[in-house]
Each structure stands twice: as structure tokens, then as C-alpha cells.
Length: 292
Image 1 (spheres, rainbow, N blue to C red):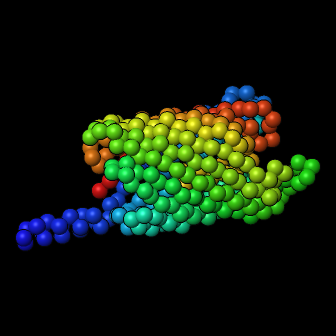
Image 2 (cartoon, rainbow, N blue to C red; image 1 turned 45 degrees about the vertical axis):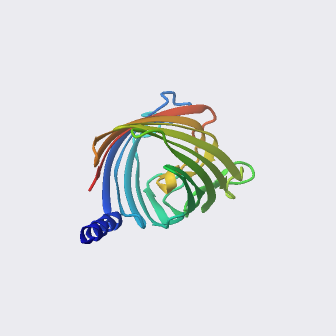
């Protein structure tokens, strides 16, 4: 009996012990070569994501940096941006809550520095090994020295405020001992009173298949998003570009139970600010995740 009690005690200690994950990442972004479709030439990006938590909470911190080169016919000055995101999630057996903020420091004169407030409320339902997750993320973006629009579509200097709600639903299915699948849907609704078009609606769909040490994610979005927020507040489109649709594929492999390598490739179709034709960019990102 003492051994059983001791074993249960050790198990409970493991369940509440903090787990730390560190994820460095680097990437490259390529833009349309036609100056009439994009003023940008290329971007390099990188950063470090880290979290610490257990079954009761999760503290997340992300630092990202991006350096964008414009086409030589536009300007020789590079656009440089620093992003810092901090969030805290609190978990109970049937629900979760999250609060956080995403701060942006940039030399871009279109929207300038900005801050995004992050909130989330979600719930779970279990059916055997299967899991349903649902909830809504909320964001409030504020750019004090931004660029809005007046009724004549002229750009005017004024603070820009954007509210966004993103209901989500996901379903995790345990297929076998070695295989499982995660399907998720997100709807993004933005209210932007400082733009002529006051609201934007977009949809995201992703599917991740796990088999032993390998996983693959296919995702796509469509609709309209402008100065919007994605990925739980970690990704902010702090531009006046009108995002229309895109797709992404990610491949990952568990080198050890604690070490994961992955690579992703994505494309976005959008209208770049101040230009009227649709254009595209392509993004490749590599990351290495270690948990201890």
C-alpha cells in the first residue's frame, strides 16, 4: 500500500511540475518582382518563442524580428520591426482563460508602433480519447500614430483602433496507437471604424495529421483581413494591406520525445497598400523546439 501511495504521489508531482519549451526560428519572405504589384523585395525574419507551464497554467513569451528590403527603385531604407508577445493562460478541467499583449516597434510610417490586447475564453468536451475544443479569441489593436481613411478614401494621420473576435472550433481524433488527427476552424470578424470599409470577415481551416514521430499540417484561409490578428495573438498584420487568401504546409519530426524540427512554406494573395493589383508573397520558416 505504501508503494502505491508513493507511486501516486510521484505521478501527481509530475503532472503539476513545470515544463519549459524553447523554440528558435528563422525564415525568409519573397515578394512579387513587379514593382506595380509590390514595393517590397524580400524579408528575413527570426525570433525565439518560449513557454513554461503545467496542467494549470501556461506562460508564453515570443520575440520576433523582421528586416524588409524595398525594391531599389523605391528606397534603399529597410523596414525593421520588433515584436514582443506575452500571454498567460489559466486552465481548469472544462475551460480556459487567457490574457496577453502583443507590442510592435517599427520604423514603418503607415501604422507605426502599436499594441494589441489579447483575451480568450474556451472550453473542452471529451469523448474517450477524442477531444472537442471551442471558444472565442478577442483582440483590440491600437496604433497611436497610425494612418486611417476619410470618406474620400484619402489617407489621414490619426489613431487607428481595431476590434476583432475570432470564434474557433477544433476536433482531435485518436485514430490508433500511432496515429491521430486535429481539425480546426477559425472565423475572424474585424470592426475597423477608422477605415472606409468598416468590417472584414475571413475564415481559417487547418488539419494536422500525426503518425508516430511525424506530423504534417495543411491550412488555408479566405475572405478579407486588414490589420488583423492570427495564431492566438502571436501573428499581427500591422499593415494596410488587404489579405484575401492563402495556404500553408508544415512538416515536422520528433527527433526525440523532447526535440522537434519542422519546416513550413506558405503563400499569401493580397493587395498591397497604395497599389491596386493583387500580388503574392511566399514565406519559408524553419524552427527547432526543445522541451525540458
